[in-house]
Length: 211
Image 1 (cartoon, rainbow, N blue to C red):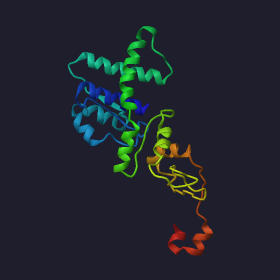
Image 2 (image 1 turned 90 degrees about the vertical axis):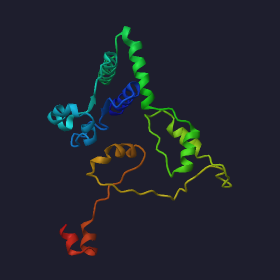
Image 3 (image 1 turned 135 degrees about the vertical axis):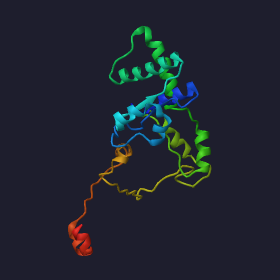
Image 4 (image 1 turned 90 degrees about the horizontal axis):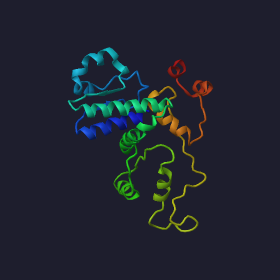
């Protein structure tokens, strides 16, 4: 829902050609305050910011254009009911789909293989974001077809040896990487390796033992 709320805000800002709306990237992080630059930009809403503090998930500054304000209300209410499993009435379906398709362009902007290849030529990596089933893996596999030949048996395909093991460590108490953690757990095996106190006693110092 947070990605859709951010996409709606981006669509609003594009439509109105001004910074009129903002949404928190992760509304579950109630331990994080609204960024100070956002508070400054929406200074006329100082009282709500102080009253709601870290629980402000999104904000919109209306103008004199009532039609624009109506669009914002419909977009966020549609999202709210959609997340609750409610569908719009038949006579409002076309309006709902029109608003949804507009902010979906911000949610999943079209990007071609050539654009990604050009980015890879300038950078070390490119992050492709999007919901499952949008072709990210298919594009990555196609881009791994390299313009030179490694010889048999790989040809022009990049291959990793079977004896290659990628080991990574993470702090189990670090909440800031929770979203990344979920994505990684879908793709890799996790093994818990807790510290062995006997090793600390044998190889560590007195300070490490006390810690």
